[in-house]
Image (cartoon, rainbow, N blue to C red; front, side, top):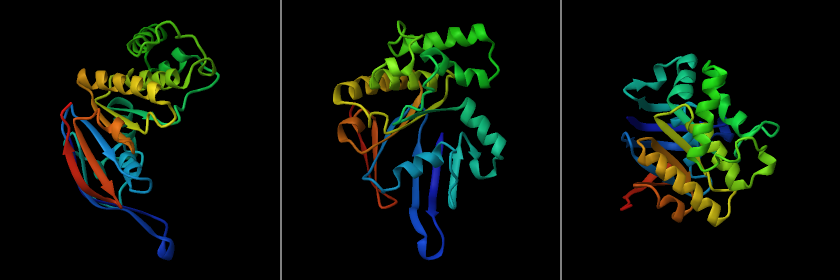
Length: 226
């Protein structure tokens, strides 16, 4: 489903140029739960941004569902993000003055879904993450764990093929972090491919495969018995 070969990425120019990815190759199969681990500055978030088509590599190949991403136009990549990919970030990225259900409805609004259907799908997504009784709460009235669950509901409301999560438990305590990971595991159990970036071993252990990155290269892969 996802295949990358000899992927490279750098930032800056000339003497200030920093090579972040140094020829990464890996494959991710449909329905997998993969954790990408590494210390700060290892290149894991850069890799995730490229996989999510939020950034472009300098070199190498990236194939997504048999499509060469380098040959896709900006509009085609936007359609992939809209219909095929869901994103969860460490900082939640919720609209503070909008209710939980309004936040979750937002991607459906961009898809042109009518108001009645938007509300139905958003409610179902919030119920799926255990927030069926808080659909009209503003984010400021929700705990950090609940806000992240709203973000997850927003990410899956469009029924994406791939869910990309960048340090989704980074702002949460241990208990809330485990709750979020259990939800991501359930989503994966329902057939959604999950790609997770984390620097925490305990969080990575929820995945079926752990890819360790250091200094822009894959150091090792571990198949996890989950």
